[in-house]
Length: 149
Image (cartoon, rainbow, N blue to C red):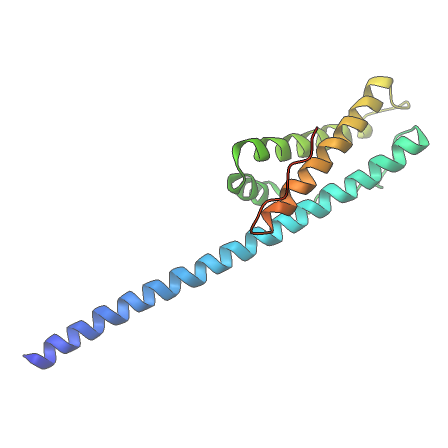
């Protein structure tokens, strides 16, 4: 009888240890995946900002194919935005949304940018700058101060 009780206790302790180990490793994997998504989102923002800088300096649309395709897909973006707070997630989503909108405007434009489109480029550049800082702060333990917009 005592051997059966010790066997049962061993099974229960082993099950608890297995559960705790699995949860710990899964948490590490999730944090690592989130850091990777944040790094790629930072890179996407930086690349599109450089595209906008060249377009604004030349006072024309960027060359077709010059803007890279985003590395962060919709599924990954949902994960990242879910981890950010309300205001930061809205800022990052707005920056990404405006970048997509400008890319579509560029793709369907037959003439140079209008003054309103130049203003959109400037505003999107600033939004992307805020988004870069917010995704960068997501990679660190302590968030970076939010830049004034």
